[in-house]
Length: 487
Image (cartoon, rainbow, N blue to C red):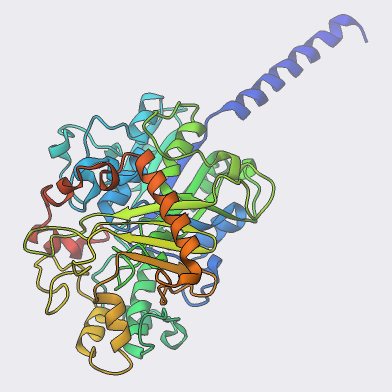
């Protein structure tokens, strides 16, 4: 073959290789799906045989399932603030509390991606609840523009060739629930597994089934979004993340540092870039998502971010424990709602490893979920919300089979709590005073204190009194709007 004949083929080969290299370097789209009050282990991928979550299970099957994913705080606003900023909530001033604000000067990953050329937006619940204007967001939003028409409307408004970052939010499965909706939808109430800190009665199983009904409704939203990407031929170019903002809205779960409050489902899929069918044991925090998304886009994470990119874990080829550095997570809580006359919260911090969970309650003299005599119902904001499970335990608290549940859910707690997570996954038996575990307790206390000091937590470096003084912007207008959850 002559050189003249070979030359066009050589040019074609170069063009094809260049196009392939460009495709490989193209930054991915980001679809972030987050439920409201959806906790671990309530998904089929985690072995729950009652709740049906085919969309989440698919993402887990075709991507990576995280066994140990935790939020920074088991309360909506601080959890979402931490996700957006990649920082622990205790670093965010008033943003550490529910119904608060977020300082516009604090970098958030959606707006950083927007500056890098991403088309950014959200649908339904994203940041909050709270008042953004208080923090300086007078003509913008930390998650970008809202699209009431949902994911399809967002994609329709997308500039040509722009990568996108979309926050698919929901108010499911937050209370209130339609009584009996779970059973009516076909959920087997008798098969619902009840946590060990509740009495195993039909009333509570049915309440959990109603919660499952809304988990399933959120899962259908995720399925619709994935189907839309498939129809458009963009699924393989999109990293899909599905999770919740903290545990289920039940006693000793949401607004608590036990696993049922701070541990959440997490599955991540990214086409051929992430090997599917893997289950990861590394302990990760949702503060890790912001630096992960920025790394995907080739954007440097701000120095103030506490999270660490999950790309090394995602791009690994195996299951199990991937990195030695992800062997523990820390989390905490400040004021959830002003359930006391002085508007103080229930400050606590915790650390979780594969074997142990340690919680430090900084104000053990306070009732954890409201003042007596009704443990929470004395406050107009209802520190645990309304709910069948709460009502049942409170109303039957004098009965032998309920007394322990009432004490665990509503009674005062000691300053230090230590749980053997292998032997006691429901965290029923506090071992902090056991002499044989003194060395373990001391080691966890030291490690937690070191991490809190390094991240500038006012609870250990001073100034924590401000957490109880920050305004609470919730009220009756929000509660009246709860009936519009699906809008």
